[in-house]
Image (cartoon, rainbow, N blue to C red):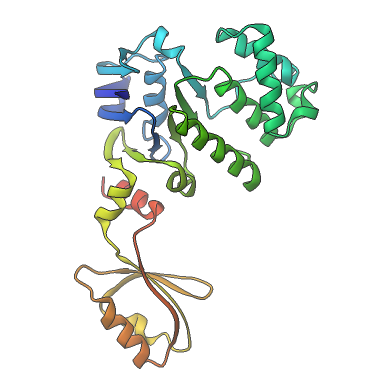
Length: 298
């Protein structure tokens, strides 16, 4: 079963069409990366899935049912903007929000303490939220989004404010949840996180779905068109007509190959230019490059 199905969904605000005939399926038990530049329509799409907004046309199904207040109760939602009560104590606010999701006071407190310990916040449980750093507040908000063990989670910029260690911890938790059968929609601008976590992606630009599918298949469809060369000495071979846009790195270059280019000819030119080659590798484009290509040519 697909956890989320959008069919030709459109939403406009006055004269601005925020989402324009978007169709999308999110496979149950998978992690989808919902991508797009600022103002692309991602937040509006999320709010319609959450039944906070109602589409002007099209249909949305969540966990097999038409979207409604009932389906919203099955979703764990982490908004991009922090929405917790800053003067409440950490443990109190987690227990309070867990109770709103139907947990008993005792069960909510037990789970909250487990989560606080797991995320290194146990000693802050009696502190007011306002006294925590932004990264700590983000971890608290993450806990409130998942403590009721929802089958579907929508996480909007979950790594905001987190250092690399805590970001890695949240990544590990997300993968654990996926392994246990949860479905996750991850909306983020951090492409490296999407590459590590997501089974599939949907790229929205100007309100339209411009690219979606399994991430592995999308990357393979672009082919190995990026050349990574580390070298010392002459760089005259970079003038080879098969080399397109070039990015300078500390130890070498990354270059786009033009259609039909033969990498062996470039390697031959490099050797003949008296460059000392220490690495010569063809790579698939990064997700960042696919993102730029998709939004540039949309």
